[in-house]
Image (cartoon, rainbow, N blue to C red; front, top):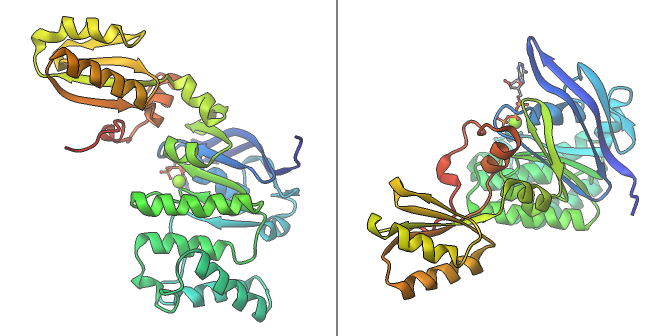
Length: 326
Ligand SMILES: Nc1ncnc2c1ncn2[C@@H]1O[C@H](COP(=O)(O)OP(=O)(O)OP(=O)(O)O)[C@@H](O)[C@H]1O
Ligand SMILES: [Mg+2]
């Protein structure tokens, strides 16, 4: 299927002094699809989004949003898109409803349309009850939802979201993912930035990975994860003396086993939870004492390490393991 493009970045460059924050980024997003821009702190995600949304002028290169050139037709670009930035932009002193009305009126939409759409959006984002309270009384998750609602008041065909769920608790994050999926189902094109492979995995049709202002990989979530390696089962023994026996047993269940003797740990290639429970059962039956058993999926850090040979800075190591606290 050859759908028309909703967003195009064409060799975008942004230079701040000596720092090339964005260094030749290109991509194309078909209408009705989701592009995830994945990268660590300082990679150039926000700068890329700011250029495409006409908030920042490219040093060179250009882009198109809904067919309009970002440099030649910034007004038309702004009419075709919504933006939810990294920092919430709602007016703290206004209520949720007032924030929506204000922005709707600023867009020049009719009073009646704004009133109707405000109700619909408050409903859609579960803000009906909080709608008449000042935004300063909202939780972080409610603010994000209001922010997103505000960016939807003019029903833009293209929506840019800069780290929409950073700082949200897991439940609010999952809820927001649900709302975003609905928007996509209704035909909205999404460009979202994130530091989480999981988020890009959940939402994106295509992902680009950027590092130091450059696109270092592009593909579907599955393609990227495959590049980064499969999941691994990580098993920690109670007794170092059991290492050899444990390794032999593990080799019956996995084609590739790595031994970290100092940590009494075995790391084995695995396909997922099914492999992990098979290995768990085998160790149970063997009588070898196990301290811990977990599944480690490729993280953003693994994707990075694989692609660049260096780790993504400022990624918390503890995020890597899918561990269930005891
Ligand atoms: N207005 C500015 N003036 C000077 N340097 C800037 C400006 N905005 C961004 N930078 C620099 O550009 C680089 C990319 O920043 P950017 O905010 O685009 O990264 P990011 O990928 O959004 O990071 P984060 O995940 O932390 O939001 C960084 O080195 C940053 O310090
Ligand atoms: Mg940013």
